[in-house]
Length: 134
Image (cartoon, rainbow, N blue to C red; front, side, top):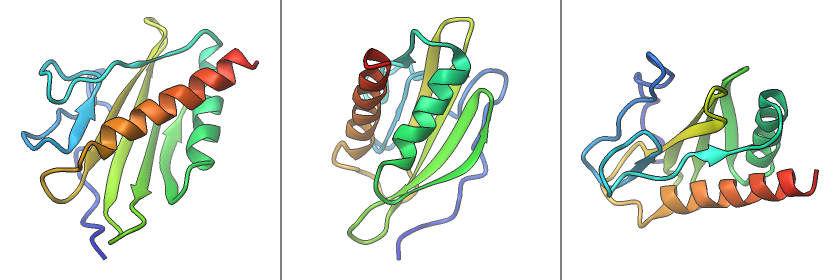
């Protein structure tokens, strides 16, 4: 219902995910401002293993669809239960720093009531749990 159009600035450009817009409905580990900044995901396993784990975490979440993936990038759409709002969530593996940069942004509206930040923290917790149980 409120899916909106898929953004054209999705993907990695010169090692960077797209910057967040001025609206508060986006978080990014590459952002410098307090409103949008979130810590990147960390990992201790191999890059291949963490990307496989990340994909498993995403696939096990409700109303998700993986749109694109390769060795160091994963892009998924998350659809809200009520009203069908779509959020675009991207993960970019920086194997030289052992981190995964993340960007989660709502397509429509201004405020997301903290949904994007909560989602990233949920993914972080589930990913860490998988790593610790490995």
